[in-house]
View 1 (cartoon, helix red, strand yellow):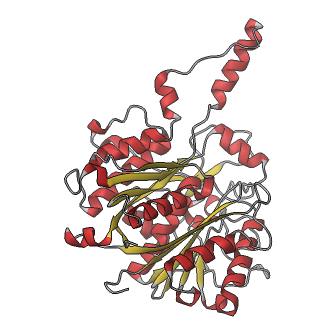
View 2 (cartoon, rainbow, N blue to C red; view 1 turned 120 degrees about the vertical axis):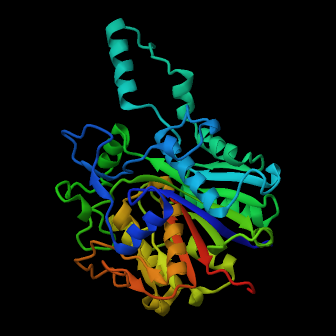
View 3 (tube, rainbow, N blue to C red; view 1 turned 90 degrees about the vertical axis):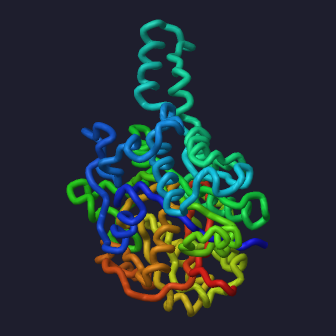
Length: 422
């Protein structure tokens, strides 16, 4: 199997519009959660979110790649991809077009609430139960998951594998894992991989609220709302953004003198086959994906220093994930450091796993583990080391990244410090 390394990183998140600023937010424990501004929230139970700020795509990306049909999350993804490619020093001439590909995780677009209201009013006024208002071709294309991926491909004329994954909150993790496999198996030399999402519309906020998944207790103090592993956690905070990486085959990256941020070592995935919106209390599913990634990496659980947790700030998920870590690592679990970037950025849904990868790479490069902020009321059932409130100076050689999603999909990745001999 070929070795796969990360040579470029890009990010547009509630913590900053590039990867270094996002990492600085994670490292300093800075919250990016604030008032929800994409919709009118009067009368809503939830009025907060982790949102991207002061973002202008046209300032970041050349016009010739085609920006007309990009959705809001697609714009985040394209900007993050452009940054990752520049960070990697990759352009159209780096490799043959057919040796470069794109793999992204994103939500599939859906009709907006206003369109549904307009259709309802039309049917009521005309008496025609089949009446509808068609979308223009441009609007229809904005719903396509492939349009942003194609725009990313145009940045470097990539004509190799293109994969679009829609597995909710594990989407970007699956996308990175599948890109890792494509390079391992020789189907590509370079893959732009990660995810983007923005579920801050009327329907998404209402839907998650009706499910009881979002916290509604901290509208007046939004920066304290996301509280993974805390005894007063009451639901997650929606976030948005895009996080993309350049993955390369090791020998090819070395041959062109690329800077290597870290190495991807293992990938595991599983399905709970349990409830749609809850994680199994016994940690099953998560155990399988974590064990699969560790076994795939060939390093053993004793080599893992840091777990970048899914850590949503919901009662069931945080307990299930903690239970899974304890069962997989046994008595060794108390040695681990564990933290959740969602405490600072909110839940970037399809882009959440990619943000966790960025946190892992930053920890490896800087020997600094980001904190879990707002962890002020310990839960006696959650008794591991979640790095409360303040980052910790500590060497990290191997990190295990988790992402679990509605529907029961789970992914885990192992990322390690690059070493010439492994």
